[in-house]
Amino acid sequence: MTERDEYFMREALQLAREAASIGEVPVGALVVFEEQIVGRGFNHPIGLHDPTSHAEIMALRDAACTLGNYRLPGCTLYVTLEPCVMCSGAIFHARIARVVFGARDPKTGAAGSAIDLYAESHLNHHAVIEGGVLADECAQLLSSFFSARRSRTLLA
Image (cartoon, rainbow, N blue to C red; front, side, top):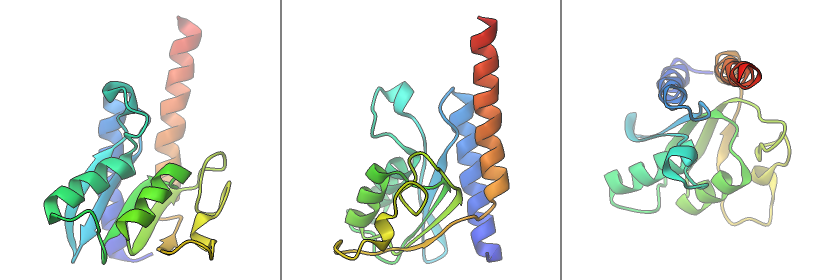
């Protein structure tokens, strides 16, 4: 883990906190090109009534608009949680060069936890994948969110 990776993951964690503040699952993502943040996003499927509004998708959309291209070669995606299958597909189609994630997702993670799409040789694009950057902080944010949600449900 480099200082640069840690810096950008902290920025993604701040976006995850924004998601939590509006009742969304706290996942944040950002896209970096040439050391500049060109796309930001956080989970927003509940508020937008859109199952595709995961943090990664939102950040990819923002970066594509910023750079004026649906292809994002040379970009790195930072995300606080291991990407799912849907987000991994979008990452492949965008031609993201590198994905850096925080916490693993044993139930839906598509970068080695539940499945490893990034190791699938039949796919025509392969991003470099690096997990575990600030993993404890990323996992703790998710755990706290779901613990609080369960407490509210039990009290209701």
